[in-house]
Amino acid sequence: MIGPLENRRLARIFGVLGGALILLAGVLELLGSVSGALLGHASARSLVGGIDGALVDVAVAAVIVLFAVLGSRRSTDVRTASGAILVVVPVVVWFLLGTSALLLVGGLCALVAGLLLLVGPR
Image (cartoon, rainbow, N blue to C red; front, side, top):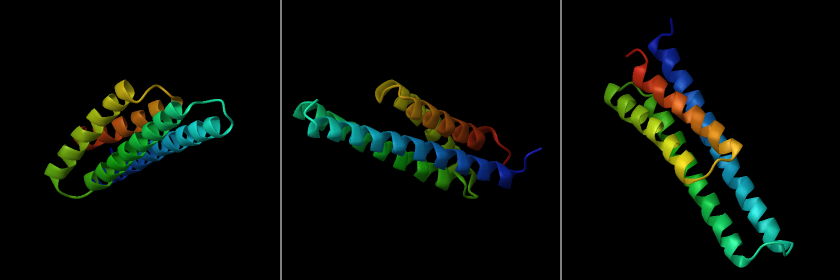
């Protein structure tokens, strides 16, 4: 049986891991769009689109890490709210940001973190 402290620790680990994977996806998207534009294989429009997507990935990663860390605090209300946000954000990521492997695995880790915070022992 997992105690409340271990549950919160696991949720924090999964949340930070998910945020890190989504951040890595954003960095790789940025590098891909910049290198394509520098080599002449892509237009300025695709460069702007790549930068835009990378910034959104970074913002989503920051939100996931923030709520994973906040959810590891002692307050039950904060844990519940953080868990709900960590369950909703990955679903939004999957529908709006695309289906790269890093986004899928990062979103899955964030979803697991949210479920741990919602259904774990108090």
